Image (cartoon, rainbow, N blue to C red; front, side, top):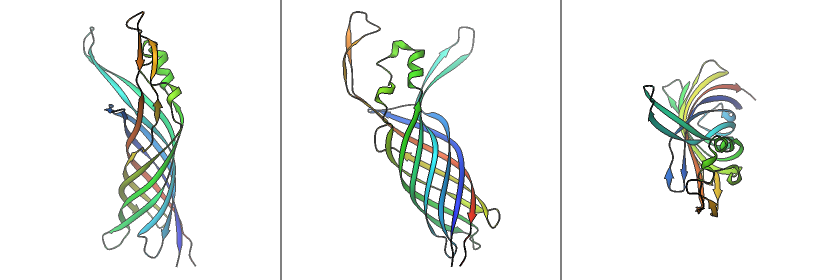
Length: 222
C-alpha cells in the first residue's frame, strides 16, 4: 500500500475575455504558469485531490482596423490586463488509456481564489487622457475575486518517477474583477461646457488555458 505525491510544473497560452456589463469584449492573448501538487494512490490511481498556485494574465482587448496612408492595412490592439495570482483546489478523476495504464485521460473540477497583483489601466489612461471616464481605472479594481475551474487532459509516463501532461481548462469568475457605481457631473471632453453621467460598470473575467506540464512523482511505500 502506498500514497504518493505528484508535483506539477506547467505553463502555456491563455485566451481571455471579459463581460463589461452586458457586452462581451474582444479576446486577449496572454500566458500563465503554475505549480501544483496532487495525491497519487499507487494501487488504483483513479481519483486525486490537487492544489495549484499560479500567475495568470486575464483581461480583454480592443482592436481597431485602419488603412495606413503610407500603404497597407494595420490593426491596433489595446489590451486591458489584470495580472492575477490564482489558487485552485479541486478533484481529479482519471481513466486508463490502454491496458498498461501508463497513460490516462482525466477531468478536473475545482474552486478558485484570485488576488490581483497589478493592472495596466492607469497606463492606458495616461496614453489617452481624453478617455478618462470611458475606460475603467484602478479605483474600481477588486483585488480579491472568486471563481471555478474545470478541464480535462492527458497524462503519461516518461519514466517511473517523471511524467508529462497536457490540459485544457476553462476558468470563469463568479465575482466581479471590477465594479464602480454611477458617477454624475463628469465634464464631457468632446463637448466642452457639458457634463454627463458615467453609468455603473461591472467587469467579470473568463479564461481558456492550454497547459503543458511536467509531473515529478514522490513515491512512498509501506
